[in-house]
Image 1 (cartoon, rainbow, N blue to C red):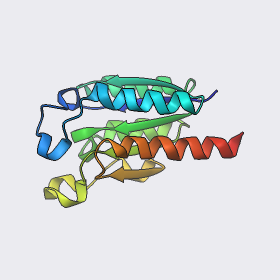
Image 2 (cartoon, one colour):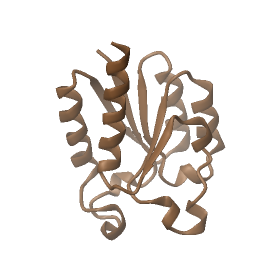
Image 3 (tube, rainbow, N blue to C red):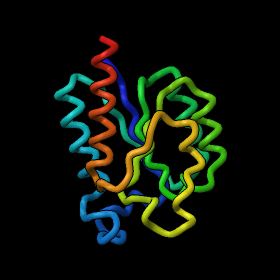
Image 4 (cartoon, rainbow, N blue to C red):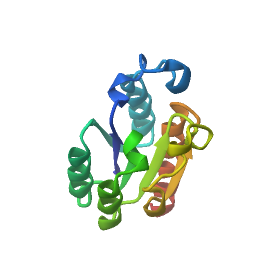
Length: 147
């Protein structure tokens, strides 16, 4: 059984009430429940975490190197400036898929650059909660190729 860690960065705990015109009306718990259902169908174990603190996310990435097969990461604002997250991802041998609810390339200029993009497997942005589900489907497909 494969194991996936879904990590969420700053302010994502406010989903459902934070700028719903941009981020949608689903809560983070709603998104996690959808992911949990699909992972269970696929026979995968899935864990979730959210933190508003960069160091907590870095620690989680470092711990994941021996315990998970994939990470789905929405680093939120840290995407655009956290060299610490970028370096943690580069330092571990765990494939990471970067996700965003909104299309960061259609938003404010400062959101266009992802400092973590060069060290992740790929990026999915702009599909709301479906961005997470798309990342999970890619993992299911890739893990199926490994079985």
